[in-house]
Amino acid sequence: MTVTRDIKASWNAATKLVHAGQTRSQFKETSETIYMTSGYVYETAEEAEAAFDNSQPRFVYSRFGNPTVSMFEQRMAAIEGAEAARATSSGMAAVFASLASLVKAGDRIVASDALFGSCQFILAEILPKWGVVTEFVDGRDLAQWQAALAKPTKAVFLESPSNPGLRLVDLKAVCDLAHKAGATVVVDNVFATPLLQQPLQLGADVVVYSATKHIDGQGRCLGGIILGTEKYINETLQPFIRHTGPSLSPMNAWILLKGLETLDLRVGKQCESSLKIAQALKGHNKLAQVNYPTLEGFPQYELAKKQMSAGGTMLSLSLAGGKAAAFKFLNALELVLISNNLGDSKSLATHPATTTHQRLTVEQRAKQGIDEGLVRLSVGLEHADDLADDVLNALKAV
Image (cartoon, rainbow, N blue to C red; front, side, top):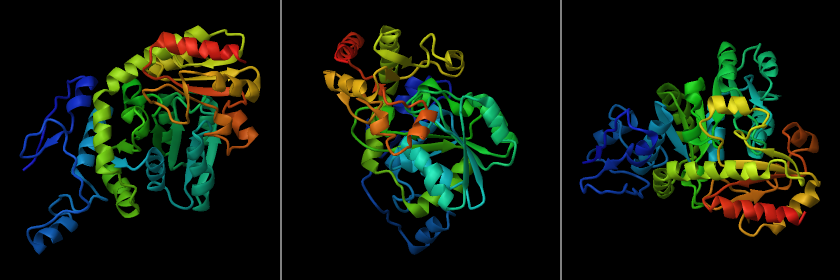
């Protein structure tokens, strides 16, 4: 016998991050149980038949659903304010499934042009092979959204803040335009996390995360999740996931549940440090630009203050000397590690033009604001003064 703990809607996010969705077995364990099983048994053949025709819903195979994974899904739904959620094996599996389950040949997608490299590949390379048309717009320009959404559209996809340039999209305005065009709006909210921005409350229909990032937050495992209405999750997404198999491991789901317990503490600290570092770097003579959403002088500062509760854990720095300067800077860092991951408890830096976005053309990178001097900095849990010193000292080497 298992019992799922009830939670109160009035509880704050920090409380839900610890308790939401927990299902306890007959042993009344404190920590969530890891159900490492691929299959499940039935008392009778009739029970198996009822399970497969869904007249008696239950777990039948861990590719379709698993108790530990279900706890992670329920906890994320409670935090996001979503009706339902489905977990995936990675963040990119979540992005792909959220879109591929929606569209068919002849459909049209409108997307922001400032996207993570793999997201760009799905929209520009994979889906067009299936006969899906993708139109890219400058996500900051509402006039471009309005023009692109003046004709019927199946889906809208965007990141806000974007990876790596931290460009913002006015979520409410774009969602209003998209819905008039008949589109389902899918938002990759990974940079903001569910704590700093809630796209569903601003009009989005679907939210996706790479749980590998802040949700795990300690560089241990891969995972992704898709959140939305029960109708979308159960009728559109679930059949796609069930038959294509991008399922999350129960072990990874358990790690992600443990990560959620400290998400509020980690992200709060990382946001404080990020702003402090951005302020320390503002106006530095070796930097052409410092991008951070809630740094005064950021081009979309007012929009960031309107739709985000804090600026996030990510900075991007554009070194005036281009690639050579960026490489000297990265190689001079002593505390910050060179890595293409983000949202970790350890501070990480990467050069997008030669790593995460290297497959894009120079022109495509320029449209996203990714110049040869751009460095993406993911701020961790180290002391902010130590991080600022490390970055400032590394700039001396440029």
